[in-house]
Length: 420
Ligand SMILES: *Cc1c(COP(=O)(O)O)cnc(C)c1O
Image (tube, rainbow, N blue to C red):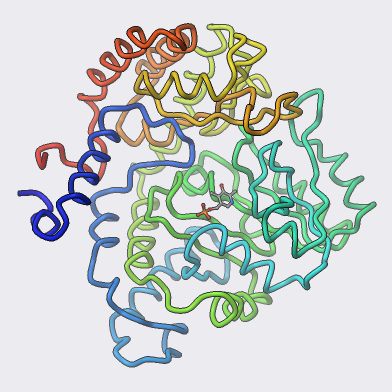
């Protein structure tokens, strides 16, 4: 019996967990922010460390009994500092959004001007979008991509920064398929006297695996989630220069949070250890190779790729103009075909955000299963077939069966189908 205690206490939840495991095994998971955490990460996440309260920081806690939790957190911090080459790390943020909130809370005053990439161009909600706390608390003046190239235009960003004089510029995105020139951001920030905040949530695995340049240590502050390309538990870290260390720690606790999630902290330490291996380097390189192969295939099927291709783990492609099918319709058809994606706005999208023109995909999860270029070619063909048949449920089911057959041969880290 698998999950026997749950079977006894709450079979409804046990059944749903197993159903989700099967879904994650049987389908191609192309959502670029998702991944498969390893069995070791899952063990740490599910451990009794969840039982302990430890408000504060190692050796400075409010409750007794921290003999082992302190060691867990110190190990996670040491590994984070070493991995990113930053002098200070805080591993307590509950997730990426609170991590950004804590950084702003630490170094900005309410009403200060910030510049992040506009959400419809690939920025994150917490980078100053108007419905988010970051757009309400701070004076957010978003920058945009270049309308011709759909790329970051560093000259334009500098021009805008000179005009609006931001206290902080945020770089790091959720839907940008190209590499980021961090040095350029450093120079722009130096020229206008702004803090350089890097948010590497999506690409931390690529950075640690050597497949994307690192903004560390040149950024003043940075955050990353731990559950995307890094393949850890759901959580986040803040990295910063020494001068901000105390303010950052105080912003997390007591500024924003209470007790840290020690089970998550332990699993972050495990993920950082895994990310320091040669295997992880190969993994990061394969993510990019797979994305390039899949992008090439989609292009050959007549889909317009935003920026024309990809340098990282992510592809944004256009379905509305390319095929006369909306992004949402396309994503729904793909899901029926066993290929899980999300619809997404494209830069300068003529359609409203709830009816976007494109689909966002990424290769971190399928690469964790050991898939390579040959599987990406098949995937590209299936995707084109599905989008050509958005209303043909029989055809979509036929594709789903083929997808499932292929997926059988590729293990998902952290899931053991023998348990079912
Ligand atoms: C995912 C993401 C976040 C937010 O992380 P959550 O854990 O979902 O709160 C913040 N910034 C960027 C760039 C992200 O990709």
